[in-house]
Length: 95
Image (cartoon, rainbow, N blue to C red; front, top):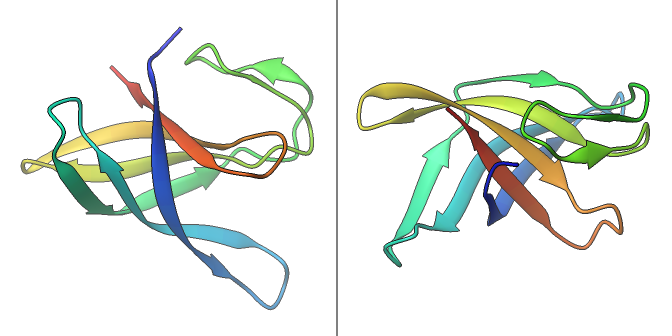
């Protein structure tokens, strides 16, 4: 299973009910606060109950996104998950 990082997320709530992740902020393993703009995403929500490639088990009502970030001029892919109780967000890094 991939390591989970708690993240602050800025989301756009659209008139049609869709939700788009826009920015992420988290504390790195070195204790440094970092902010990233989401450069691209795929909404993986609303599918059947399953285990994601990062090892996180999700249900059909969970919000799940695969996001593209630019980190040190290199593209990185992450999964962005909302806790099942809706209280917080976390990300896992795709290697």
